[in-house]
Amino acid sequence: MNKIKTKVSRGANFVYHMLSVAKCGYDNEYGRMHAGKHSSDDLRLLKDNEKLLTVSGGEHCGELYGIFVATPASLDSPAVEYYHSLKLLFETGDTQKFVDAWKIQSLETMPETEAQAKEVAGHMHNSFSHLRPQLISLSDVMISNYSIYCNEVWVQSKPELVEYAEGIQQLFEADNVTERLEMLVGVSLKSNFYASFCNSIKGGAQAIDIPNCQDIFGIDKGYEKTKKFIAHEYAIFLLMQALVVEFDLSNTMKYWRHLEGLAEFYLGMTLGESGIFADVQPIIDFYKNEYSENPRETAVGLFAKAIEVFK
Image 1 (cartoon, rainbow, N blue to C red):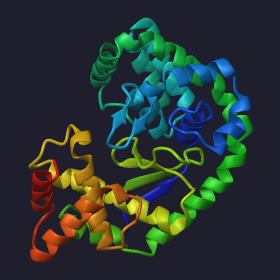
Image 2 (cartoon, rainbow, N blue to C red; image 1 turned 120 degrees about the vertical axis):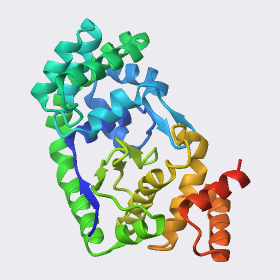
Image 3 (tube, rainbow, N blue to C red; image 1 turned 90 degrees about the vertical axis):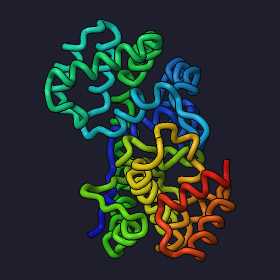
Image 4 (cartoon, rainbow, N blue to C red; image 1 turned 45 degrees about the vertical axis):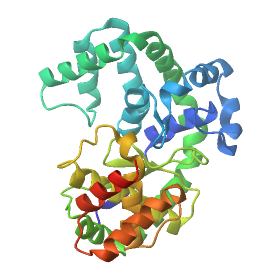
């Protein structure tokens, strides 16, 4: 049964739209076309905080990427409500008010109990208190620009995004690639993996976790290449679960090349290599050679050998 599901989220598209128009990690025709809809001061503030807000695969993850970009992009509830809650938390330091707002929104990330939610909110506040001014001012930018995006961009963007997502979904439903990858990696998922589509991220980081069971993808690569790209990320998701038993993967930057190479190796055994990860081709070739000598070698075994050779 296919476990890759595609989706189109207004929240995710709003968040990455704002990054694109501000040239934060993305500098493309989409951003240039829509930048005039927004205040130049707002875009400048986002750009000034680019390093905090953006990611670059295997190289950099901004300190505010998780709390300010990934979390609101992952939610089905309106992103603007999240930014209202975030601003409230850092303006007042009142975790109860944040949790109350959280409950009203029924955010998917809401912990099971109110006590746990307050603990999470308190940790958020304490962990990012040194960036309090930035979080408040940046939240204001997102709040003030949300209606502009919804009224002037989302209505036109949604049909194209939905059509693309449905086309990719059909490709996966007609294939058993998730089952084949699970057999190769040695992990079986009990839940789905979600590919969320945005039309503003051409030329910048894609396949970004928001969280690890949901990644952001563009619509600029064509159906077949996008299918392979998503399947590659599904393999990464499987590998993270297979390898965590033996390896400390908390520092993903350290093992980025080894993970990407192993995922691409397994993709090559199912759909064929994507061709997107040429920079780790030596590691992919290493996995091929090792596997040809010992076809029973596990993902854990291959990974262990690679990190010894490629340091």
